[in-house]
Image (cartoon, rainbow, N blue to C red; front, side, top):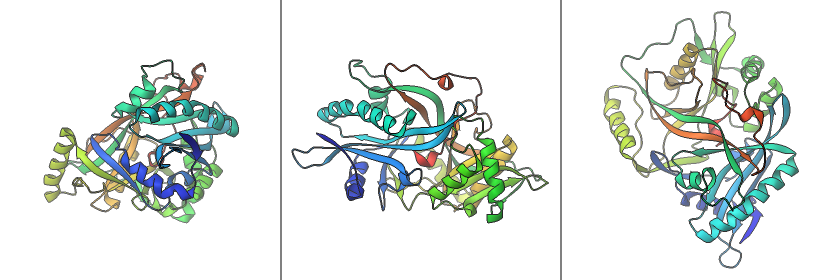
Length: 372
């Protein structure tokens, strides 16, 4: 087995390998990427590396992969490089798994040293039992693996429909699409709202503008702004649809998700409920990115406006972190959730940083669901 860096020439093979592994959630999903496999990484950072494990003695087929990317963020008052591990995929082969565990920690150490990085984060879903058993609660403590330390639990919330008795947003909150002239005020607002978050990828308005430019396809016109009577921004969100680059194809529904699917199908005949697709068909949804608000009424107004702004075939998704009272889904919505955790990857002997220690009702981290 040989570990090497992937290049654009590996894009097609990576797409094929990526589809072989199902994402285990209440709806079992197969991810199909289109165009360049590396698009999602490049819209976050220029410092990104994808490592692949190939069998150099036989067909040179990809057996495992992982992506590491690094972005500027503020932690403990210091702007520094912060890493993120995503798209860890391993073939169901004992030999491959053993080889991969031998490579993983040295690769992380080397990448952290090269980027002068202290902290690396990753997301693991609670339903991903293989990953949970291998990394979160490994049985074989003799294997040298990174220590996954739980930072915050969160849920991927999906908004599927409004109940007939759903409340209208407060009329005093104006919710409207953003224009180019709103960009300076929006940059200031995003920076201000993220100032107490850890990690914080938008410590200044300049960071927001730089990140928006790097994202590329997310434009100022994709933002919805909530404004008060004085015209000041009091909330925002951006509608992002990744369908042109990746599709989440339903493979199997568990009993609870199947019940939700059938209920939404029936309810859609006399409401604006968004149906879930049949098996073999992609999910249609928009991410609520940059979802920030001054209070829960504004948060609801943004979700309500976003729901009526997207096509009637699409539902909405956003992250809700445990302890964040404002981002709980409103009872006016029919919603579902998928539980996951944001972890910090530490060396086996590394002490736990102070910012990772639990705090009651601490602000949610600066986190984009579209990036995981």
